[in-house]
Amino acid sequence: MRQIDRDTKEKRNKQYNDWGRKRPAYICLVVLIVLGAAMGLDSYMDTKAWGRAFVYLLSISAISTAFFFLLRLSFRDISKLYPGKIIFCDRLKPTTRMLYNDDTSYTEEQKIEIRKKIKLKKNIDLQRYKTKTFKNKKYAKRVDEAVAWLLDVTRFDDVLFEYNCFFGFWRNLAGALLVDALLIFGLAAVNKWLYVLPFGSGLFWIGIITVILVVLVTIAAYSNGRTFAKRMYDVFMNLNDDDNNY
Image (cartoon, rainbow, N blue to C red):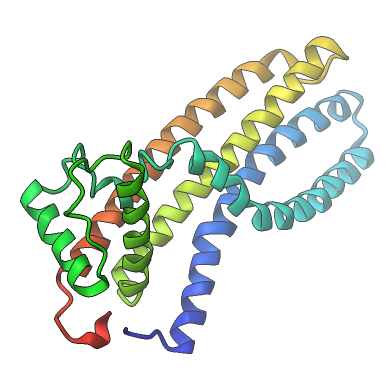
C-alpha cells in the first residue's frame, strides 16, 4: 500500500483542520456574534451608554473565543448526528450507495467491474449476493468493509484529499448552522414566554432563514460527498496491479 510521508500527513491535517473545522466554526460564530451584538447594543445605543457598549463588545469577543474552541472540538460529533446519521445514513451514504443497484452513478457493468476488482485485491465477494441493496444486511455489511478498505488504499491521492476537505467543510457547516438555528429558536422561545428581548419579534424569522440555509448547505454537502465518492472509485479502478498499491 502506498504510504503518505510524515510531512504530507502533517500538511494535510493542518489543511483539513482549517477547511473542515475552523472555517465552519468561524461562520457559525459570525451569525451569533452579529445577532448578539445587535441585540445587546440596541439598548445601550438608546441610552448612549458608550462605555457599557464597549465592555459588552469585549465580553462578546471573550465568549466567542471560548465558544470557537468548543465548537471546533465538537463539530465532528455534531456532524456525525447531523447530517451524518440523518442524511448520510447507511441508505444514502455516497461511498456505499454507489455499489447499490438503485444508484445510477455507474452502470451495472461498471459496478460489476468494481466488485470484481475488490474481490481480486481484498477477497470481498460482493458479486455473489443476489440482492444488492441496503435492505440486504449481509450485502450492506460487506460493502461497508469494502469501502473502509477503499478509503485506505486511495488515501494517497491529492485530488481526492481536496474533495474530502470540501466535503468536510460543507458537512460541518451544515451542523454549525443547525446549532445556530436551534439557539436562535431558543431565544425566540424566551422572547415569547419569558421576557421580551431586543429584536425579539424578528428572531423567529431569522431562525427560519437559518433553517433554509441549513437545507441548502446540506444539499451542497451531499453533492460534495457524491463527488468525493465518485473520485474514490475512479482512483481505485485506475490503480495498477502493483501489490504495493493495495
